Length: 368
Image (cartoon, rainbow, N blue to C red; front, side):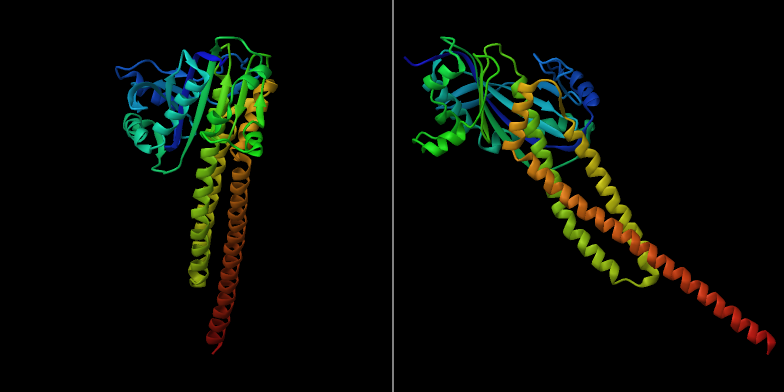
């Protein structure tokens, strides 16, 4: 007999890069001045702070409900946004999915995913956010970068199966893939590769853009960990694109500097070197905020999920690309600094020689 989902939800998330940083204290004050529900600071529910904690606790804000057509019917969705201090906003739309058969639950999850695919759902929320928190945004961005993620969460079935029994009794493949056609054995194995359980009655399955979470205790810690990993990936993509745009500009500037007159080039080389040094310092400082967004020390289970999510989202690969580009800029800075120093030294030597020549000429004229 098919399992029934007694208590569950489908949660669609969309992340945007909105600023270099967000002053969360100021954002909290701005929101409290409006006739809205109070804000809360994000915290891990069941995990001791010494085991896993946020570097800087994000700001969680409840928004007005959103109505979307699902399967032709207007459907009520709970809306919220989470603000990270390193400039990311994560919106979520939550569809309550209780008292459904497993197949109907899967269909609702897929329907929500299709309904929120268009950016038209998210852009009005994003624009209102920017207007409301304009004074709290440090270095506002109009970046087109965004990431999405879908979570199917079940708190209770009509039975209490173990994790092993659950995998035998429900087919996770349509939910995790969004496909209704049968997948190959290899594709099925790939989708189910990242499976985690801590107790005998919980289960987490991760994929690139979706996750299934069965947690009878209703804890949200796994969702918080996935949220941070997604936010880190989005920020690394931003830095990667920022440096991609900066490198050609840097090469053009260096080439232009080399064509200038020696008398002017040393100062211009020094100015360009200072600008590059400032860029490296800025990106490095912002990256430290991102890298320290979540501190995992003692909770091995959440650490495994967090590490798997970072691996799935290719955070390390993008981070390595950012490091390589920063290294190129640092090397260029060093070369420019040396060039500026050598040209200044050459000018000083030329000036000294000129002074000696002038003194010799004056001495000869005086004797004559």
